[in-house]
Length: 383
Length: 125
Image (cartoon, rainbow over all chains, first blue to last red; front, top):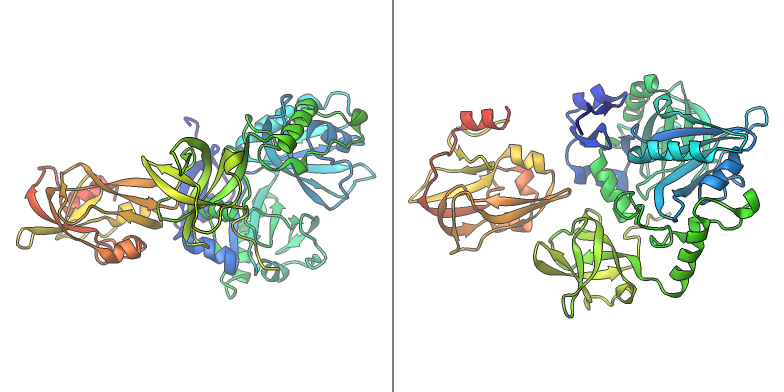
């Protein structure tokens, strides 16, 4: 990237903490502050604090905002209750995934529905352009709100206890995938119980000018609980263990939600235009194929050895070495203590194998390393 | 970054101790370990292998990437650090001490090994 990277409102805070920074979708973001494994374990056992201000917020408001989203996205957003959130996707006319999204329905304002669409940083412009293009004929407005918010996330078993010290909002009444307006450390924020780590946690959308105050307050309130700043490196291993897909890895324009095993996000029963939405026809076909004769499936792989699979490595048959799939994400799993991967494999190889009797290997720079096929996710928190 | 004075350094970020009875110890620098992040797997040459200065002789896997390990000198491997094979995090926690990688009976040295000052400047302070 030749342009100067964009900086979040917390840039000087990250530098003062000695963060290793990385370019991510045009943003200069903290990769890690110290050991990424320690940061990962902090989120699993205590809590971690993330700056996710690179995520792209888009406001959709108006009497027909819900109907516009029903048409533009694969989900049934007009049915979403105020204060709730939904994981969904936006597809192109061929059913290919343009991005995966979280859509929050905010409280109506004078009976007018308001939604906030949160896109991945690298796709935010694409999503914005698509929503604008798909808006024609709907009484709803689409607004680029990327500069309106900083986004902090506090994730981990201690997150609720730490956040509760700084807010009067009813966190106990706030369900997973719900959000409500409130104040945090005296600052207005949208408090959402969402995340990308496989742990309980919260995402806080707030004005960029307030970010450093809230960041400092959360670290301060979390000191005794062991809350630490966490970078994107551990966010990636956390989401991988939780079996959550990453756009650009598991999800691409060449895959449909059904390919990725996420067909449940596609709602064919909608009220809009007699149920029509962008990508409907090809997605119906993809649904049929996934039901009857899936060409390949998304599976988890766990290493028997210690070498780490990476995105793009071939998955091969252990019997004869023929290529039967491809790794989309791979990393050493801090929780399992072994390398893990998510991979697309031919359906015939997608069944989890008995312990030890691996039927697949990953070609790791020329040597075939034995891997067990497992059901996703690798990690599920105890509730 | 504290690069010990008594060591010499390669531009591939390995360090090399002065030879004792012809045998030098090799590891990677703190600068390299920090750049890698948490090291989770090391593949080292085997005792008896011949390594060649500037050529790969193993690999280091970290959370985010895999990196080749280069030998700073030519020679025969006399010992590998089993502790670091068992606990690769030693590369991060003690790169110049307990995180050493292998010992090599040196038969040839390139002429571009760096002093501590030169390496510190090379690695960007």
